[in-house]
Length: 347
Image (cartoon, rainbow, N blue to C red; front, side, top):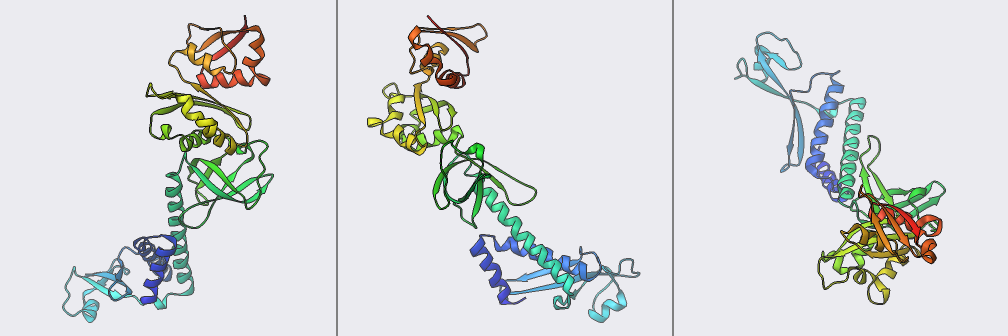
């Protein structure tokens, strides 16, 4: 337990970011565990580990209370025996005895090693959990390290050792091709704490949050809070409908999201590999909102029913198929976007 030992702790702090105070605590626990193992389960409540940063040394001692009659050999000592070690002591005093850690047996040393390794793993998991929890609902650019039928393994950027997340088949955009060595932008859905192994980072390419974050990155008015994204309905790889609202009457929310010459929305569409994006203006009036949500179809009338959650929509005869959409997609997305049950009829 010399200067090299302290240098090792400092190296762990520098390389892994684990505070040396944490490592000292874990090593203290390891030494006490080794003592208990070496002394056949002897109590460790009176074992003291002293760290001397100036001298760069670690010492271990056991404190015994001076008593008339011993009831616990591991923690008590008679007055006569104590005075052989410390002549001026009296009943009730605590007398310290140095422990030679070099005399620990192989099994005790192995026990200490396991405690230290476990401590490092726990610290690394805690750091990963804290780092990626702060990145929930954000977009990260990762490196594809493996791609097969079970999913795509993505190495995520981070401060410590590499962290990998699985992009499962259900989180992949249909038709996208993922190759090892390529970089991909993913949406961090959540970070789950697991009893075994490190934290699980859940990532997605199909989550509506990916569209939201992409527009926030492309549209300054959204980042400034002038334009708000009120709701998103998405069928990944095919089509997305997004409702937006402006807090400034002089700013057109749909125009801000589309951008000059469609530049902003085109950048998002390119990232989504050609997925269509309909941007509609949000309204507190259910009739107006449903009419906008069914674009590009023209709506003649919207009759909101008494329950406030469903409506009947009338469209021109030649617009019925457009309003419903291929396989009902347009009507389905409009219903999800507005939260209304929509019954579409032609005039």
